[in-house]
Image 1 (cartoon, rainbow, N blue to C red):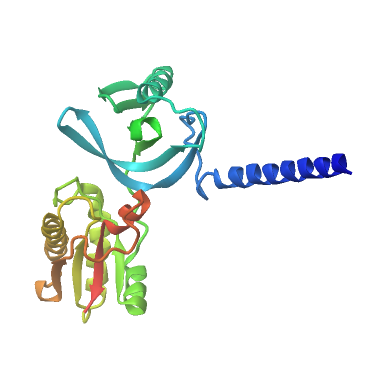
Image 2 (cartoon, rainbow, N blue to C red):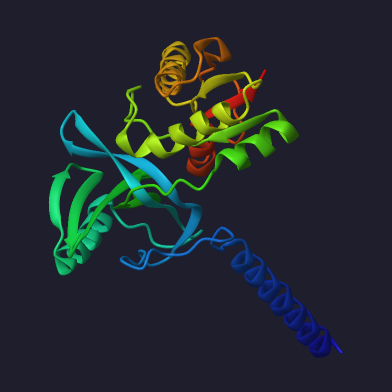
Length: 276
């Protein structure tokens, strides 16, 4: 009888242990909708904790104390080590990616203890890549930006529909970090705002700038106002009466997404057209 009880106990223990292992495995999954970039695989025993794939910009460090904003089709992947897995060193992570980049024929732009940046030219494509190691190797992030001109997908009619329905529309007009000068590739968006106002003579709007929460709040508010005024000036220059357009900057005060994730911060960096 005692032997049977012992067997039953062992079987029950194994079942509980197996279930715990399954539960642990279920928790160690990539974030929904994420995947590795086609150019580069991940380090062993790492999962994707955060992921972003969209037209956006990223700051690449090109030397100590100097950086360059690159915009295009961007993939951001934040990897973290699985629970209980052997921890690699920051050097080991960097060397793995350095070897991969050498195989691809990429040029090393800058490197320090926890960071490395490369430029890859493939035919008529220019791609920038960096890896940033965090927490002494427990996590690291990968940014890959393929330079491309943004395709303007929002038309004047779509803007009008959004204004009539919601009272505002968010536009993602990219600026260099800390700058408020409009880039040539934003002209398509500006042209649509001008067309919207010319086609609707009674419409008055406020152009309002917003940022994420990176940096000082006061500086972010000033920068967002400067960016809004840049858009307003371009619209007025396009033939719209200045009395129909105003500008305001809210900085980081009115987020529409979670600033704790890169995707959330990207959504918060926006210019809104608000119906008066």
